[in-house]
View (spheres, rainbow, N blue to C red):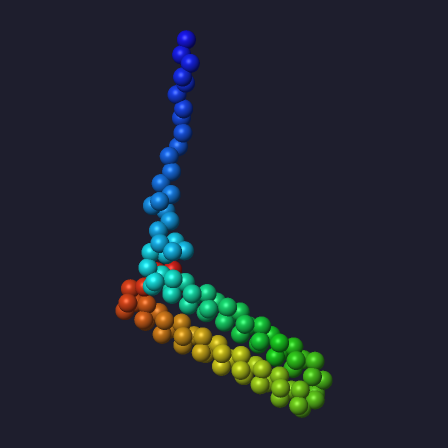
Length: 104
């Protein structure tokens, strides 16, 4: 009779899965993730600001001051969108030249 039985277990290579601080292998990947997140948050904020301007225009009931305020909201939202698109284009060019992370 055999008292010691074989144990079948799976090994783990967790050391090779997590490398560096916050699982980023270099600073470029961290910067790429941060800029990507900032652009997404900015795009969502721009969309919300644009919608708020549209709603303000609708509920202005013909009051010229409220209409002008709503138009300024919409204009500012569109300017913000142009700035975000320019930032994305500049970041893409810089990322290509420097070879920073590929996750954008």
